[in-house]
Length: 221
Length: 260
Ligand SMILES: [Cu+2]
Image: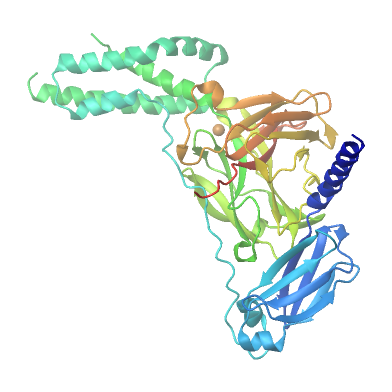
């Protein structure tokens, strides 16, 4: 029984101890400036990794180029190793900041080759191929569903009575809820844009109906 | 026998009543919600004034201010704005490349927009927060806008179903009892709201100016806390009210599933 308690306490301690380590995600970020690689190590902007162990390796072969420690601001700077430059090797940079606090980052060969001072000409930095997903425009700006039946009716050959039935039905379907909305609207009073838009619609619809009538008339219906 | 006038009245009514259902939102939507790799450190930002759930755009004049605050440092990005189209209407775009770990709080101050249907000006002060390279300190820093949502939930790295909590500051002080409109950026009209009440949802700020919303599905969600600005703007000799919105956008995601 006694052991059971010890076990539970131990477990609790483990869990208690494990959590902060996980939450304490350590960041390592590296960038190239001239011939140097700058490594920044932090838990957050204001909480830096002091004296963390850095290992710089050939990302492909695992060959260690150099090791070092961050300063008290979490920074570590090293010149691009000549061996790496010759091999055009990607660099793997690992940070060890104490038990369980480890992370790594990479510096691609093209990063330091393109940033190199004298010997390397031009070749602008390439890592800007972000996926551009600008919101695509969607749907036209028309809400009103009612004009649709009338519009399609204008194309389909139909006798006058049938056409009227279709239009009337479509209108009836719409008009019931609208009556109520119309009342509400009257209380508030329609806005200028609404009125202007409405007039535009009226003119358009009148034209459409005139066209339909004209067609029917022309066929002697 | 259908009379033309009846048809016209009905159609006109449809047109007249369609407008009030829409809620306007200032929008600033980044191409990525977080930046995790140097290869994809460039973020495209699209700025618009739209109806996000219904996919209806409005023309937006060039903003008065656009920039980013990172680690207390403000960078003016107004000059980087280029015209673009959002939902077939005039909008603005820019791009920003993160060179270092940081937390970019992008903000937009628009020109006040006169909305004839409501007989007032609308001005949505809009923000989105993009963290880069593991850094996350500073996501709750205020930009210092006259009306601003300060997130109490970290506004990135959230799963669907998480609660979003924010505090509304108006002139730097918590604002109680304010309506916060919530709308989904319904890109490509992927969803259809079952009825008009589900286009825009509403929560209110409590006595401390705090509001809460539980996010039901994945994507970008906008929170617009609406107050009236203390000043009016004169239009044709008449003083018009100014609706001042503090808007914040945040993305909520589904977890990835293990490939079978
Ligand atoms: Cu609108």
